Length: 351
Image 1 (cartoon, rainbow, N blue to C red):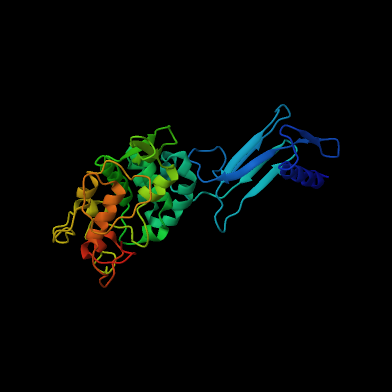
Image 2: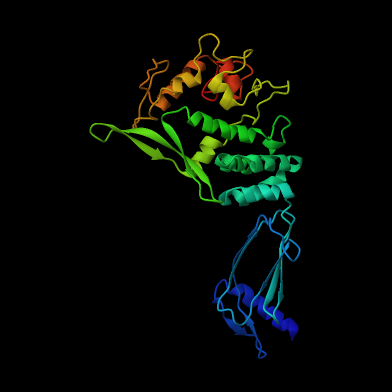
């Protein structure tokens, strides 16, 4: 009889997703009743708070007096792991036994310190970094409040292969974010927009554009989606370049000359490998005068055009690129932006 009751209870427990109503008690067929439970989702990437039971067990008890109950638990299940549910129908109690999250105390603290919208992805990603996981987590913990979202996003989205590369240093994720804010302060056509909601901090960018539909034409600010900001402004990888700032002496296509590309292209800091030697323009000199991003219309520009302080940022950037990379490709063909700028040669890929 007990096995029949248990089987019936399990059936009711899961079929409620289709038919049950929260708070109902159902007859088990032998005169006894059991609560019908509604489970919305099962998932849990991290649990920083201690629990009275082992950290991998969730316990829920319903009493006949409860009018309704909805349980939403998030559990991350990786390959080779399992989730089980134990049910005691006599008291309406169930346990969800989920696998340990695999996070060290430092990684759990980093997940808790990150905005809520990136925590799940971050918790799933950190264990893939192996021995470097704690150092990556520490960058999030130490990040200033205004860049913690950018740092956490990059940690959560960098390929493990990039992080596990011997030339990669964890502090680069913080340097990457710091340079975004540093450059934004130097540019008149863009502003960073901060949403400082506690626990769910987010950032995006808005750009000044020329609205040609108004008479006379006027400038308007246009804000991009958060996803566009994080993937296309914050993320440090565009194509095949390694995420690094130091060389190990074996590079033929990935030379950085000891600088991250945001700093190298903006300041030309290396006296031994200056990309501006010979009259090539500095990126900052082309971008700082720009007061708007673009005219919001399709425009064809000729190469090697004369720069003016009235150019939009897209116009200026394209002009700078043509002037820095005016020659055919050289061998070996560079992949790192620093090497491409220093060699001054390439086709569409390098440009």
